[in-house]
Amino acid sequence: MRYLDDFAPGQVFHFRSAPMSAETIKAFAAEWDPQRLHTDEAYAHTIHGSLIASGFQTMLEVFRPIMTELMVEVANIGGMGFDNLRWLRPVRPNEALDIEMTINSVTPSKSKPDRGVLHYTLHAKNPKGEVVFSTDTPVMIQRKQNDIN
Image (cartoon, rainbow, N blue to C red; front, side, top):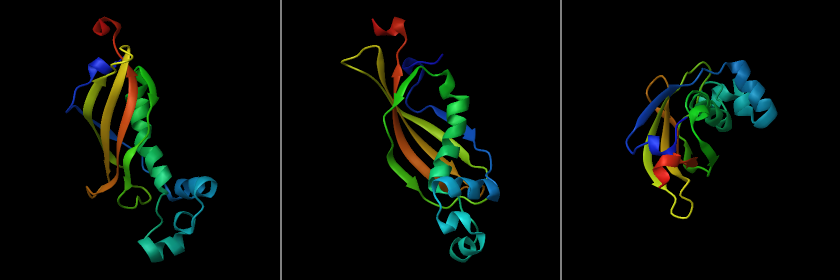
């Protein structure tokens, strides 16, 4: 298990998302974001040059490897939201995203010494190396019991 004390500002973690097929993009959009640019390939092509994924789907796909490869082994108490959430470029079918997670700060709580806030920034890049998604994320994490005293 990783605790707040196991992270340090400047640490960088790398992940890769699975590519989303056109069918997956359309199925997600049909349920969660049924705008034509996510459901109608011909229409999306006239506007964006191809079908594009919903920003919400992009965000979930960016977070999937972080949650399954890192956070399942972190003493996470709970997320605190998203700051500066940006969808900077469209994500197209069959594009895997390279994700970089940079630890910005590790702040033990003054009022609750068993926990603190880990603040990190995410950047996801398409195969051309262009940033398509970014956000700053604070999360509450437990501290190691021996580091509290």
